[in-house]
Image 1 (tube, protein in one colour):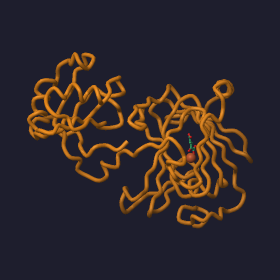
Image 2 (spheres, helix red, strand yellow):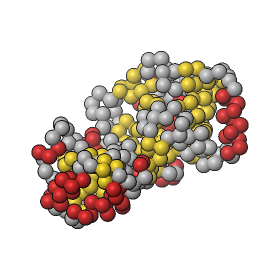
Image 3 (cartoon, helix red, strand yellow):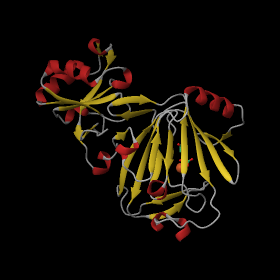
Image 4 (tube, helix red, strand yellow):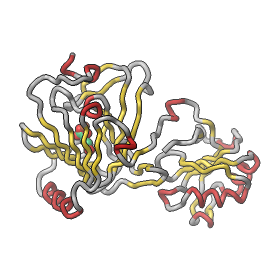
Length: 301
Ligand SMILES: O=C(O)CCC(=O)C(=O)O
Ligand SMILES: [Fe+2]
């Protein structure tokens, strides 16, 4: 999703900075109100140029009018009272402002539905890799075993020579950006998603220095120069899909699960399920990594 260049004003008094664009909270696709319906309701006050998601919650929108006077009329009529045409919801409306920085513009990235659309070499996504029945059986199997509680998610570890990991994420819980350590694991990483959906974001940093995560085997790139100095892509991982990271996708791109309860995928708000369980398969490496990506490789240091 590309966010419009408008944001919620800081401070309490939204009325001080009049504008043709309104920041409208408490309506949107996540509560069953489409952008088209919002446009129709606000259209009573003047020409609406567009309605956009204000952020990734699906409950806040930006309404852009052609004229400032239309925005003022809509704000005066609709702010702070139940709106019968929008399911009786009470709207909280302020004038919106132009987003001040490039980094805020990058808050969100459009989410691809397929690996070919994502276009990262070595990344593959197979939909319906297991059937719904197999999914149910796998979940029964893992739930019959003890879970290891981490701060925000639960894990199970299997094996040594061939190391599988199962992760359980409650709603809204993600994973911080990392590359699975080159020196610890070989070149293919598989991840089977079960139970609930999520999006996975990928980042390729152009410069920076390695930083070992406390309490984990992964490495993170700490970018000392400029946090926005990376390429960003994102893909939707539906339940029962299998993700394969190989080559450049595995060795040079960080992967990351944003901490959202709702993901915006092609203008639809998709709520994370009560939980997502992922089976992550990695093979333990027994010799130093000789990948073609020394900049991202701890065996090359
Ligand atoms: O949950 C997932 O699909 C990925 C997990 C992951 O990246 C990891 O455990 O290193
Ligand atoms: Fe990982």
